[in-house]
Image (tube, rainbow, N blue to C red; front, side, top):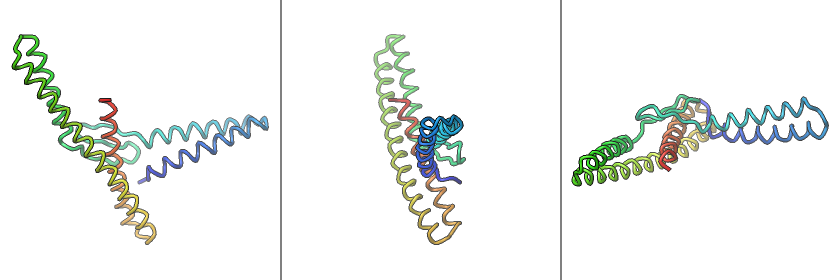
Length: 175
């Protein structure tokens, strides 16, 4: 498994190197160097974007680059469901003129929003903690040369990243 934290850093380094190479090519008039530098910058940008990609797979988040997955906190899906049902009740209540049903739907929608937000924050925090713990564990295992332990900590890191990115993705959708 690749360490996406280092791939993000690598993308920054590659982008800077490409920028320098492109600038040197421009100054010297060497179009091949300039084109190669531009290509390096584009590749670095794509690598950076890929390191921040997470896909939603139902109640799971997945990193298409590493294959790592993480189960979303159940609060997130039940909160989203409560929002949907609450909105439907609210609309139906408005349509038929039933104030109690409208109010019940409004309350359920608000409870759902709160539950989903709480689940997102918890997943984000757990993901960040797992990423940190995995990164530190991986470095310690690499220092001792224990490849099995290093792979275990890489998995902890990658799953934490997926959990954190999945929560970020959901939060951005609602922002």
